[in-house]
Image (tube, rainbow, N blue to C red):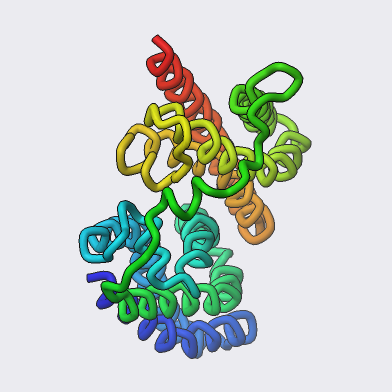
Length: 319
């Protein structure tokens, strides 16, 4: 299924590129006689783009689910780490893309949502231009999936313990008499709390949105560090094990709070897209503003729920 859908997305993207480019170039210059035909082409292209981006978003969880199914087939693999290590030239890069590219794809879908709420459909040209800009990303994402699933073979790999647990740890065991793992958790929770406050501040002040954009990247980095250095050994009760894939497989609640944190961190960037491309006239500005408020509210509560789940999870470990 992963291969079939990836090939379908690849073929559809190439096929729809010409009509999308034609709409972008002719929309503002077309005559009244040409406009009906152009509108028909738009709706066909629009439907195709929805399908393409829907496929790419659906394949994000399917990618990890399918890769997990290869674990018993790869000698030496104990979790997803070993499967990723079987095609290392692309899989580790694709891992980053699976977290970053959905922001771009959802951003386009948010623009289509705003456009659909407007009676005059003012965002057609912006949507086509944005899709043309992200076509290389769609093609790269699809091509990587096709390459990975055509190249996976049952070759011998190192297990995650041999690969990650033998590294020198980036966080010292003790800092000024306090556990380094404890300090990194405190740093993460503090940054996340400030970030959540800025999300709610952004409902009323533009500076709040700017602050979330600035803070989201270091918070994402600290989150990755906290998952590997603290959450994995603590929640799995394995003091010297740091593989995040083992955490997600053995402790499913971690998938939930990580997903909620991802949504909270992605929201400011989604709103950056809608703010730049979704405010063409008074009607679209009004719809974009309402969408922004809803997204910020959802993101704020997403962060609150995620932090509450983490707090409860950690308390259960130490009680």
